[in-house]
Image (cartoon, rainbow, N blue to C red; front, side):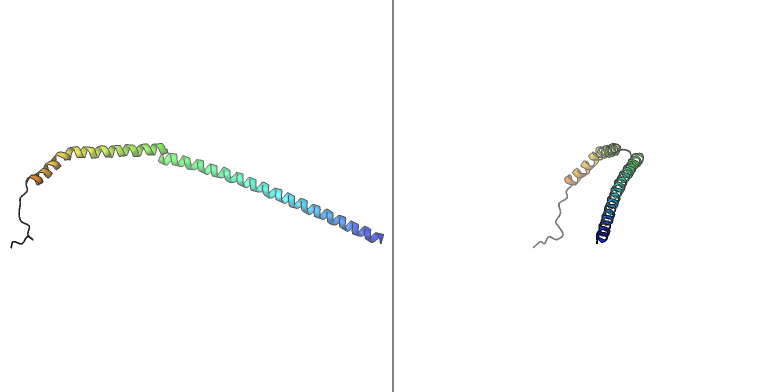
Length: 117
């Protein structure tokens, strides 16, 4: 009986060691997964920053800065407003004269639908 008890004790000890090894392996696996996740996150962030930097360079090269675009739009607007004001100055008097001619030269006549009874 003592040898059976001793054999059972050895089996229990071996089972306990195996369980500890399995637990340690799980911990190592979890650490490796966490490390891989952290490395992937770091790599993704570096990639994102690189793409953002290259996009900003592309944008600056092809479109100029946002301030430059706003300044160009503002300058174009001023030019168009100036052109419109010049057109108004050159055409204002003839238009006023034409309107006044219509007002002054009224020829009263009976409307064609008017019925004289």
